[in-house]
Length: 278
Image (cartoon, rainbow, N blue to C red):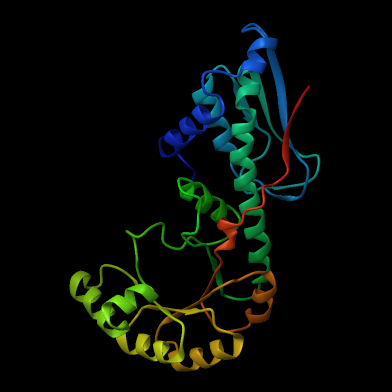
């Protein structure tokens, strides 16, 4: 599913206002409205491209006279020297939108690239890699789209589309059983119910409560194995907590359904892309 302009227009307009304000004083001093230029966005490393539409939308809002023509599509593996897209139009507009457009596509390509690398570590298993809600405010749709582009799976988009009972819910409600019972009474089977468990006793309580998914939170491998034995496939299993490539390699053979990884979106390394003028 591609991102629609209506979904991100407000974010783009905020980015334009933030960066350009009342005008690009450097470009406007050097160039006139009659000057035009052709730029090419080029990759400096290997990865999974993501965010082509965002470049097009930036220029569509900034100046519709700028033509953006992708050379490849989102999800394509690109390498050093790869031409990603061309940008042509009034020089002032091309230059004014350069950093805004690159900020979007570099972030999204960085997320997609790392996601793809982590997904490759799970090849041969049935485990799905999940993202989390640990996204930059305002960027969730883009971040989660980038995770999908890299081969990952989106967890809930927000607090509105799935019940997830975490430690503070449990403490405030007086226990997992009580929290799940209240949710079931309120919603019936309308929502999937996931319960976070940090101890084996909490795992047992989550199983007894009839949770659909049990998250094993910040457990070491031995504790995960014990928890899996307690669950006995009575619920789907997610493992989470400071997950990285090294840890995933250690637990990839465990019979779990999901591994969630917050750093896919909360610790993004921007992908090296640049715009070069012909």
